[in-house]
Amino acid sequence: MKCTDEGTKYFTGLRLLRTLKVDGCLRLGDASAQTFGTLTSLTTLSLASCTRMASPGIACLSSLTRLTDLNVEQLARLDCLGLQALTSLTNLSSLNLGWTQATDESLHLLTQFAHLKRLNLSAWALSDHCGPLLCQLRGLECLQLISCNSSASSSLVALSALTNLTFLDLSQFASVTDNTLVGMQALTNLKVLLLAHTQVTDTGMMYLSRLYQLRTLNLDCCHVTNSGLLALSGTYTVFTQKKKERPAISGG
Image (tube, rainbow, N blue to C red):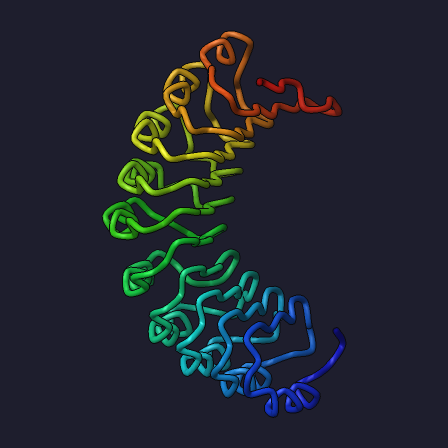
């Protein structure tokens, strides 16, 4: 869509609109966010990669109290102040904050979303004090921490408290090691675990073998050999890829 802030004014008549997705509209700025804030029937709103939008505009969405799904991924001008304004959206069950400027200093704000089940914090600058805050998000079923800051190794241990998780993406998270996987033995509901480009080795595979619900495991570019794969068992699919090879193992 190539519309501008001027064009989005025509949305104001759609008072019963429930779902709106305008991903990648590079011409939309804070004026459009302000317009969207008047559509109080919305339950789903996706503004991913609308890079002209910033915290002042996103704050106008605080009136959308019926929202259950909000995607503001890659809004690089969204910071902690913008996130604080969104805490009025207490019905949110899905929140995508990947690749924004919000930092772990605002992580405590997420605890106000009592119904949150799906959360994306990819590329956040997480630090070691994030662990206790992550522990409070016990209702999470899906968590994405792709390419997060490498200083957060100890906070990853706290993931073991999120026992409702069924989907966990730690791809390109440099701090993920075999020690990280020790705590994951408690995540017995996990069905999808993505560990591409992490530091896990054969040793870590021993811990994953106890995740009996696991169906999909991504080990692209990890330090895992045949010995590590030998420790894996169950009825899930293992994806490994080396250079141009196709996925190597499909277990039944």
